[in-house]
Length: 380
Image (cartoon, rainbow, N blue to C red; front, top):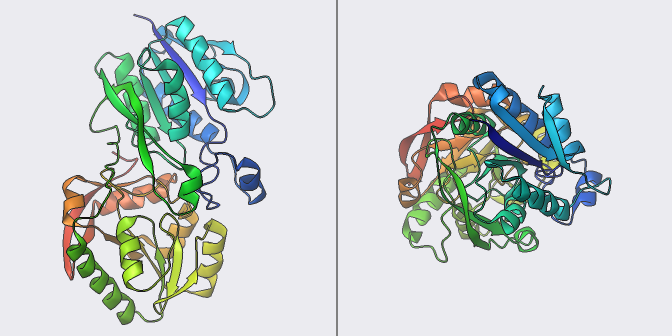
């Protein structure tokens, strides 16, 4: 049986992450001025090459895509020669309108699966056109990835594509979530359900859509976590502490009278805020000044990621400088009930391997109370 696979690449997806912009919607030029580099093309080629290594039925596949860096270039760079170009962008810089126009072409071709590289915004644009007519699978590359159509990482996406073409995976409902980037940059976390698409059902490889809470019910535990972190900082008075993003860490910072960034990375020294909403470059500058550093992270929602989702400022260069042993993971027990593993996707295979070799991480769940949780990375 011949499988017809469509491919869409959002060339700018994820560019705002390392420079601290929390997305690229409407701020591409600003991201470029801050030194942002495209990453979607690289991730797409990496996924395709891994898929080709695993798949024995390459000749049975028909690939359909758009010209240039919306998919055609990536397929060719991965070594796939039999490609049908079904859409050509009119301008040099592609937009969401190009994504939607390409999707209309895919509908006419009645393809079996639409693979895309991007974030929640790209998933939303695709779903707006294809609805439930075509199942979709996302290669994670954006800053915001809350939707349940993404593979956990590039390797997982390649495995899912392989198993789909082998006929061993089924199709089911997948939530398309989205977050208002303008409000996100102001520190407001407003996630909404955009719709329910068709996705590939595989609980090991696919990321669970994040659980969104309107209120916090376990403040007592967070008070204990605050006490634990305060003790930690006081015992290591000369250390610089990087506070990660999310509601749990925001609660702790507020209790410490630190005006932190809810969805950014802040620097604290001797319980005083010395750097706010830092990007990768500013973090690396601080690391030159402070030789001993620890970073406090917490898995957000039910997804389990502590690195690689929403905090790309903590790049491989930053984490290698800090050291994996200087990462403190905190969580409430109720959150861990929905997070069977701690997930890491740094984009650096050697660094991911270091986490994989650890096998487990100690997660602080109260005052001087911890739990051992398994780590999942690109290296299954």
